[in-house]
Image 1 (spheres, one colour):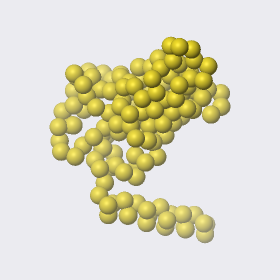
Image 2 (cartoon, helix red, strand yellow):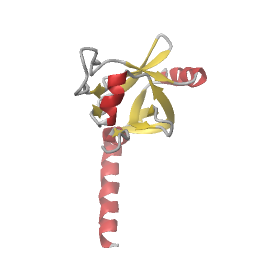
Image 3 (cartoon, one colour):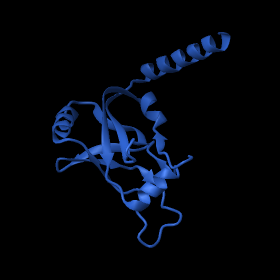
Image 4 (cartoon, helix red, strand yellow):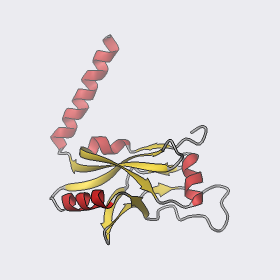
Length: 148
C-alpha cells in the first residue's frame, strides 16, 4: 500500500455469497487502527456483520496492532461499530430475519474526505453447484481472453 490509501478486499465473499443489496457504511475506529489500515495490515476474509441492541457491528475482522503504537494500542480482533442511517439499519435487520441471509463485508476503503468506509452486502450463501458454475465461467472467460 502506498500513499496511505486504504483498500482491503474480501475476495472470498464474491465466491461464497450471492449479493442481493450493497451498502456503504462508516467504521468507528481508534487512531492506531486507522494508522494500521493505511499500511494495509488488515484482513476481512473471515469477518461478518451482526446486530446487537439495534446496532450493526463488524465481527472477526483483523486489524493488526500498529507497529509504532504505545501501550494504548488497540485489540486486533475487537468488534467495530458500523455507521449507517437508522432507516438502513431497520431495513437490514428486518431482512436478516429471512432464512439464509447474512451481511458480509466486501471492501474497506478510504473515502474522498479521508474517512475509512466499508462496503457491506446483504447476501445469500451459494450452493456447491453455483460455485462450480462460477469456476467454469471464470475458466472460459480466461480462455477467451487468452485467444483475443
